[in-house]
Image (cartoon, rainbow, N blue to C red; front, side, top):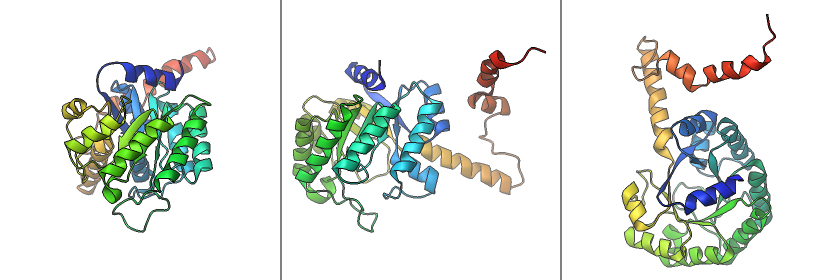
Length: 287
């Protein structure tokens, strides 16, 4: 089965799908090793790891695609949802983006309706007019037919245009053939229920990391509200940053490592040294 087919089968199973957010080979390897079958290649995590900065449309298609190849190479069996952002341009750019990820082995791709380049502020996400958003999503769905990659349609218009417009866009995306739907920044459970209903039985996706100005249900609450997939963009990123800060503090204090550091043998095992040696045996010249 192809990655998109495997993801379709997984989404058809009962239960809530927890999708860790990853950004490179190590994060993908750790998520797979922990038993997660899926992962979200998060634009915010890639921006943090590559730029050491915020997720404000500064990352390019090339950088995201390179990060996908790292993730896919380190965890080839993981079903990756790629963050295609706004498609990096107009409808034709969207098609190029969708085709590239489909050919490379992504299971799904997220395409959103915000305007790019965004206004020079971290607040709010002005969005495309509804019909322009429709055409970009239509282009994505058409391009996805080549590989079968699933299309996740995201609307960011709730904060700037209201919940009625956001729900109308979800209904429109369903009509255009989106496989998964995502309302960004719902204000409360009532808005979540409206968005899930508008998805018409297709899977709904949620960001469940705390801290943002949106309704953020717990995992059990999200499932009860009708969400099928939940991702946690800060789930690994924040502890990773905390761990690096602890390591630097230990070095500054004259110590060799932080108390939370993995033992050397566990670190080597986590990084695959033992697996490498086992695979390399076949190619060693006798004597």
